[in-house]
Structure formats: C-alpha cells, structure tokens
Amino acid sequence: KNLMVVIVTNSEKPLKNINSLVDALKPLGLKSLVQNVNTKKTNVVLGDKNITLWGEEKILMQTDELCFKVSAHSFFQVNTPQMKKLYNKAIEYADLSGKETVFDLYCGVGSISLYMAKKAKKVIGVEIVPPAIENAKENAKLNSLSNTEFYCGDCTEVVEDLISKGERADVVVVDPPRKGCDEKLLN
Image: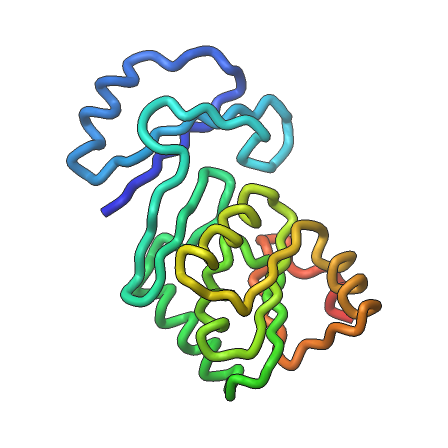
C-alpha cells in the first residue's frame, strides 16, 4: 500500500515531531509526507506551495490493469476497488467500439482517460491543475497508451478551442469538482 499524507498549514513554519509522525505512519504504507501551505482565507483547502517533508514527491497507485503516479495537488480516487467499478460502468455506458474520440473533462491525473483509452480510438483529457496534467501525461507513458492527449486549462475554453480546430467528441465524460460543471461548458 502506498500512502501520501498532506498536512495543510497556514504558514511555511517547519512542523515539529516529523520523525515521530513518519515512524507512526510507516507501518500503514507511508511513502510521502507533504506540507501544503495555504495562507488564503477561502474555502479552497490546498494552497499553491508543497514542501516534501519526507519520502517521494509522487507516489505510485496501482489497479489490476493500470499504474498512476500521483502528486499532492492531483485528485485521485483513493478507493481503488470502487474506482474500478465506477470506471467500468462508465466504459459500459460509453459503449466504446474502438472508433470513438472521448473528451474526459476535469480529468485529474488521467485515470478515467486511461481506462477509456484502452477501448477508444483517442482520448483527450482536460484539467485546470498543472501538476495533475503533468501526472496524466506521465501516466499515459507509464501505461504505454499513446492514443491520449492532455491539455491544461479551463475546460470551457479548451473545449471551445478544440472544437474551433475541428475536434469532435463521440463520448464526453465529466468528473467535475464539487462546484459542478460550468453552465457554458454544458451548453
């Protein structure tokens, strides 16, 4: 089991007793301990700065079929048995024959994208979080899936740009943040 613990603080002040925390968490599979600094007074949990206190900057998550490198700013479904059930149901609903272009909007580290890429002609993932897109590109290479493209930016703007360049989706998958899909994107 690979475990990354991210502690969010409101300053860069060094944390005390890190070694004790690491020793307590190692038996649970700790591979990475990260301090995230968020000094803003908003409802956004993570700030822009990560400090790796111990271990690796990215951890490797595996399902039976795919491997994913995940960093502190990247969203990843941590319940992998349920993730596989959810993604397999999405593939079933998509009814992919191998000829389709799939848009995976709010793609995170590309987990849905890579599951879909195994059965689609091409998958285009879009995400606004730069580290997540870096992970998605790395994960496509890690899993030898060359029929993927990943774009970093606001989903609405990137999709408008893709459409203006003649790109069309046969299937669209959305996994938006809690606030939901932008209405303009849905239109």
